Length: 79
Image (cartoon, rainbow, N blue to C red; front, side, top):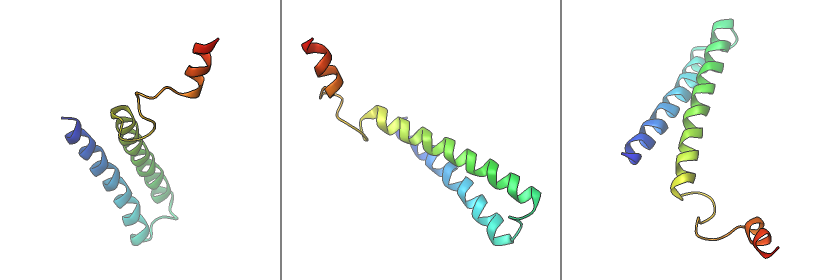
C-alpha cells in the first residue's frame, strides 16, 4: 500500500511539472492565466514531492538510521 501511494504521489508531481512544461511550450507563460496556472501547478508538484520526501524519511529510506542515537540525545543522557 505504501509503495502504491508513493508511486501515485510521484506520478501526480511529474504530471504537474509536465503541465508547466506544456505552458512554456505553448507560449502562454507570460499571460496572466499562464502565470497563475504555472504557480498553481508548481505548488501542487511541491506538495506531492514533499509528501514523497516525508514518507521516504519516515520509512528510513532517507536520512539517518533510526537505531543510531543522535549527538543531542547522547549529550542529554550523560547529564
